Amino acid sequence: MPLTRARIDTVRCFRRSIVVIVLVVVLAACGSWSNDDPSPETAEPVHQPTETFSATVTPTNNTLVAPVTTTGPTSTALPPKPTATALPTVDITQLAPTTKLAYFHTITDVSGTTEYLASQAEFFILTFGDDPYRDQLRLAGYDGLILQYLNASQVNGPGPYRDSSAVCDSSYSPLRNGIVRDIGAFCRELHPNESWFLHNGAGERLYTIIGETGVLYHMDPGNSAWRAYASIAIANEVVGPEAHGYDGAFLDNVELSLTRLIEQADNSDGVVQEYTQDDAYREAWSVYLRHVRARVGQSVPVWANLVSDPNSGSTWDSYLPHLDGVMSPAFATGYDPLSTSKWQNNLDEAASALDGGTQLVAVSLGLQEDEQLQEFALASYLLITDGANAFFRYMSDESREALVTLWDYPNYDLKLGAALGRRTQDGDIWRREFQCGYVEVNPTNRTGSVVQTACSNRQAP
Image (cartoon, rainbow, N blue to C red; front, side):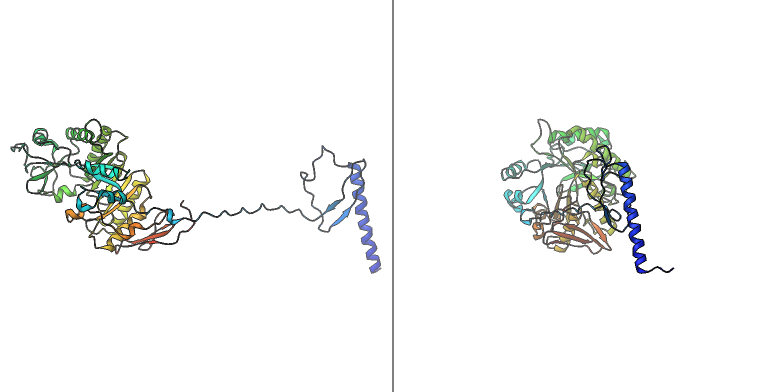
């Protein structure tokens, strides 16, 4: 018999009544929730039909129970989103210029007043005898390092002498920048010890002539007797009762290869009798530096000018454990233009030294009026500086005036803030972001740019 609308409504009502009766019976049998039962919040969830209805249950005891409302599936609420905290905007007026300048060489009138140098440079290397200028720098407010220059690999003396059989001029007065300065000391203490000197293929002492009468003899860092003599002399310059009041030692001409000896000494003939390989020569220098460190102690800074650099990417490694700082004397520019790969190796070694806690002076070479080369060199330095332990100077060694003058450029005053990461490469261009600007370098065409912009609130990592 077909169902009519009335019959359908009757059936639905009947079914709902049965559901209500069943619920009443079940709850009456179980009793109301007690303090020992799990609360509704901790009980296992019950999946109810999607249709919503209410049932009022009369408990079997006197505990009042609120009406129970059954709903569809229970949803879990998501935690609130964290509130973003705005980073403080960098105030460029509170920043110092990003470039930290270095000065070295004898201070003279042509280089400007000590007050000017004290206000511009943040790192100094002076020579024995420059003590009055050092003290004036301190009086002018400079409180950074002032190191004493010492020629580590060459000794100034009379000659040139082929070997110890030559009669030595004991009246010769040596330069004041070496570790053998007393008149007669060369003839008395060094000249008789032939094994202390390096020799060319003909057996002659390797030397470089300076001026009209002076000679620089190249000494053997691997000779144990010379090494002991030199390390004691260096220590006496900067520590102990004979020290001259400088903060530490700066060792010039610490060699990274045999290039200068083979090609650039006045009597070079392509041979160094004591060494045939760069690796052996570097090992001798590493031992030499270890002995200097042992004599000087750990608390006194020891720096070195790393010369004859092949820019292979790893030649500094064995020297760095014994040094507090290094100078790269033709940083980024080279004495002749560097290939892109050698430029990159140069920067990699400088950055690695800084990462390892060794400080750096990056010295780039060029003419004063070559502003494009200066910006290329400065931008290269800014690609690797850590903001605290790297110093820069752009200079020329073409004349004495150029050596002693601290050139000034407008880009030295730029304030870029903290670096926002390391340098990155995109094709030929290397770039580094700062809070208040960026630098870019193209080592292929030796160009660079240093750009100051509005400051962002991005923070350095």
